[in-house]
Length: 154
Image 1 (cartoon, rainbow, N blue to C red):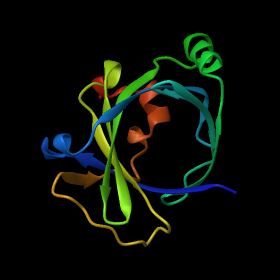
Image 2 (cartoon, rainbow, N blue to C red):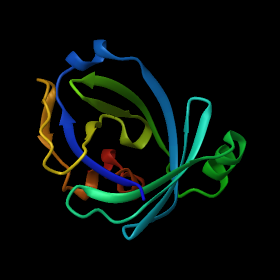
Image 3 (cartoon, rainbow, N blue to C red):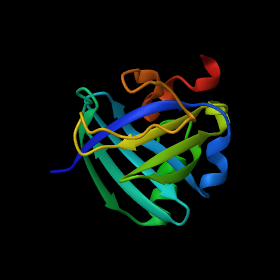
């Protein structure tokens, strides 16, 4: 069984930009109900289907599978809830963890969020100076909610 334990923070400043090269993501939701989300995404030239359960604290069930890039692109264009999430993801290793920074575009332009996946909810981790306010418990920052309520409309 897959589990995701993730904390999410706003990013401040630009000091992180020189630390990593980003990859282009396009993602959409076939189902964005809070009880279960079914996400499809492309990452550069690869594609994935992901099923996630509800978040309890900062933990939830997560199952991810590779799928055909062509199938994923068709589903994004023809079946996914709109708008599609467009973002660049940067990965920055720090100690034994990796920070993932998502810079959003389109209807979510201006939003930059950092996430860190942990082994347990109480795992200690280092916070770089560019990490701002924690938003792990704020559902507005869930990607599935950014489809329904884009950042530029807040």
